[in-house]
Image (cartoon, rainbow, N blue to C red; front, side):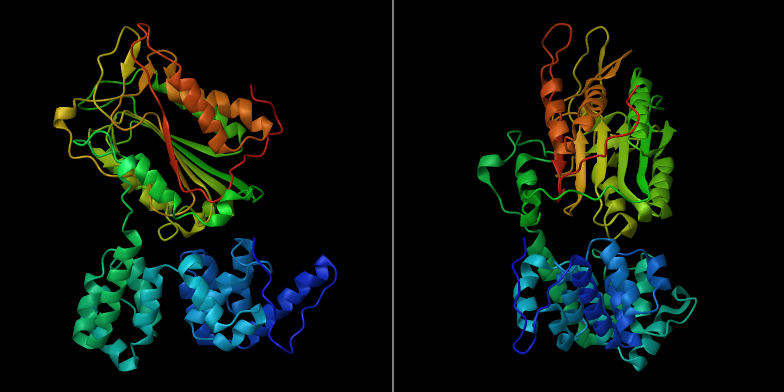
Amino acid sequence: MWRLVLAPQGQSLTSGSDENSKMTFREKLLNIDSNLGVQDVECLKFLCLDFISQKKLEKSSSASDIFDHLMAEELLSEEDPFFLAELLYIIKQNSLLRHLNYTREAVENLLPTRRRVSLFRNLLYEISEGIDSDNLRDMIFLLGEKIPKKPKTSLSLLAYLEQQAEIDDDNLMLLENLCKRVVPHLLKKIENYRRNKAEEATPVVNKETESSYPEEEEIVSFSSIKQLSEFLPVSSVEAAVYRMDRKHRGHCVIVNNYKFTTMTDRPGTHKDAECLEHVFQWLGFTVHMYDDVTEEGMENLLQEYKRHPGHVDADCFVFCILTHGKFGAVYSSDGVLIPIRKIMAHFTAHQCPGLAHKPKLFFIQACQGEEVQPFTSIEADAQNPDHMPPPLKDSIPVEADFLLGLATVPGYVSFRHVMNGSWYIQSLCTHLTLLVPRHEDILSILTVVNDDVSQRADSQGTKKQMPQPAFTLRKKLVFPVPRDSFC
């Protein structure tokens, strides 16, 4: 909860009805808008690319249009105007901070813990500030055919290079070469960015929570989960709830791999797919089912849903994968191992602005360890570990609003009945239908799923399973109770 920041001397704080108070806040925003020029608006658009869809930004002709989008995405409010204060600070409009009851010093003090604009976005903006018209002309000349239409500003040039995937937060080679030839003094900014990025990503080693399997790297170890939680804002411990009242609940994608070119079939998986489809349709999602997806098919799917225009008006996004797997990765139907992290990375705020600040849920039914010889009607979703590539250390992006539900903890198989489906997916579907009507949040539901699956065993009573969720959710996720009862 935010404490009240007193207005500067000579400035009074008005009081009155809620409607009056909101109007007063809008009047302040209008004052800010009237003091911003065309170039300032373009700068705001660029800085908001990770939060507002490019289509909406292109249609925004004034700062007030951008403010409306920020308020719609719950990024700006009278109670918490800091994001706008950060934007004004970045574009050096510090005199306007008074309208938000902030000072330059106050924003600087809060930035280390409240920063929303990414280091990468900040870097590009700072680079653009150091490129004059002559520098821009020289850069466009060096880029040649990479730039079919000449950008009018340095910001539009950088935005185009980013849009074409010529530069990103991990690939600055092209930008570095341009700066080296045209504006070498800007190379220091790139060096500072890399140093700050490395410091931000450096994990805190906790000896007590390191993996108990020194020869195996966990997909998401307990220490990784602790590190992920450190990126969550303090307010997440309060009872804040994700918004679930937009035009559309969202899209649910189900990848159901039964037949494989080089591996055994997965009987029982269709039962899981049908249950997931039924449950998420009941919850209000538009469900899309894809069977036996190849590596190329998976990449096409990810590109399609990463750019899906429907995300803008949606509350949430769900992606389910039913397949064979191995440490931190899942198999395509043509036998290619695809890292889970690579799949999830398509839906970060940077890659998919329409889902920024919205919950993104990934449920994966696949083994994450070595094969266990099954009894009678129980199979393991694993393949021979001797032929697998090295595992990854983690799979969930270090960014807010993700949840990864794994059928099993790292190093172990997950079980699937050849007729009734997998233990994990069947338990997940059952408890969603039981507990959503009781207004339980998703993490509470997954805790019950953990308990249920952990008590199951194969027919001999010797093989067990424990699911594992990992998440960076900032708020509680409570699905609205569907009007129709589940049947």
